Length: 57
Image 1 (cartoon, rainbow, N blue to C red):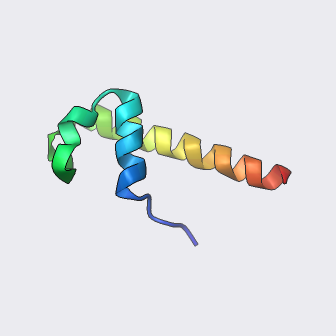
Image 2 (tube, rainbow, N blue to C red):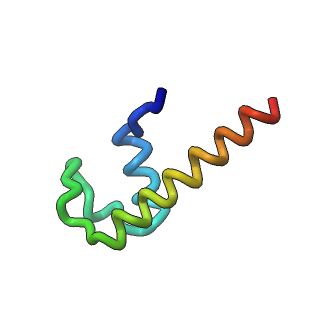
């Protein structure tokens, strides 16, 4: 069963991608479609990395 990503994790990814300043106060309505896509891509990469680590253990 999939878990929903926490707001903290989403904010950390936005910070890494350089648009955290747009999502202060939890308002995600100011990000562009491209930024949202980048966030999803980064979240998928992070999830795949975690799954690979769990598989090796």
